[in-house]
Image (cartoon, rainbow, N blue to C red; front, side, top):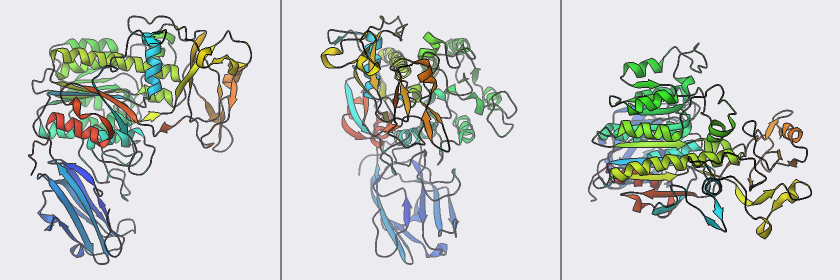
Length: 568
């Protein structure tokens, strides 16, 4: 924001915001003093803001004792141009500049956006080693998104912090606007209610409001989790999961698949986390959705020619990862043995969405890459990166017969972690001496992967030496965690977390590692490292070099032609 003489008001959207022509946004002006509404003079390119198109006005004389606030809801600016908003309210003055842009005509019929949540370069490398094999320095094959012709480095930082979370990073992809940690579809203002912050329209909403295309949301996390939620939801706090479930229902997305059933069933039901008696599962059925809860039901519904809308929830929480589902049968797999794979959810979604002759937008999230990177469980993250590759292959196969399809594969943010060598159990000495580096590393001896790309044995005698660089206190075992996801730290006295002693009991030579994160941290954290995006299909040429994450939104709406306003 550029301040003028006197005290500065705060304006949302913020200075230098880029706004898609014809999209909706809330204009919010926050003052430090209490004033009368008539004393607020706001001019957009020399014209009073009351001449804008908007759905309603709200004036808060004194907001939480911090001054007056003026809000215009659902503002729409159709004309492509550079805009300057000047606000004058007594001693308070401020101005912001916005770039309202168009897209030109549509270039594609369909867009499929894959999010490898938290996926870093080392996750891709580990998945390629395990799934494809490497002999004398040459990989025997590649992941499905390795050969996409266009690639970009994505900057992921949010409006308030260098380090992002999934809510604001995905929100940038879905809205083209920056926001703060834990927020999605809104600018972070001083509003007290988490649902009252100034909204910006999402891709999902634009698809449903401005086109006749279909919308699909797929994730192996709770579908109320940050990444899938950001396709349609608006909240300051990503933990508003009951509200997000309601928004998913209200979105009219033709396909919603994933975990998180606890927020779709009424309180008192088994596993329910709702605070009311609303039964969204029944309401989806009433709305004409095929409702499924197991892999077998999903596959059948996806193949049924009559299925036009599909809702599936396969776990009350996050779904289980590939290593557990296919190999180890740990975590909650015994309780939920009939969960679908991400490939099956992707295929079912494509089967349903492709029935719309006008096309579709589909978001598919491999969420568990992030869920396993946090607790430093790289093997599980690698297996789920393989699963992402398999799901992307499903989309690539679809695109062979539907060439008017843009496919994008990207993390929303990254984690620390890199491969430093090979751990060889046959080496003498303590555990750290078993790490071979440079010429002493050699190669791991994972077995040849099965037809689905997964090695059926992960606890081999020569393993990747994969180390994270942001971690809590923990015991390093340099072995895969065969009994369930790694729990590196547990709560000690007060808010301090200590290394989980169970791993020293399981492995006598485990190394105690003093954490380099604050003592209240119990898992690893995200990094500011650039995310690597790959893309193929019409419109993919836009993705190149270094890009801000808000530019991914521009690439999507440009391909879909969501604002075919000519430049003036």
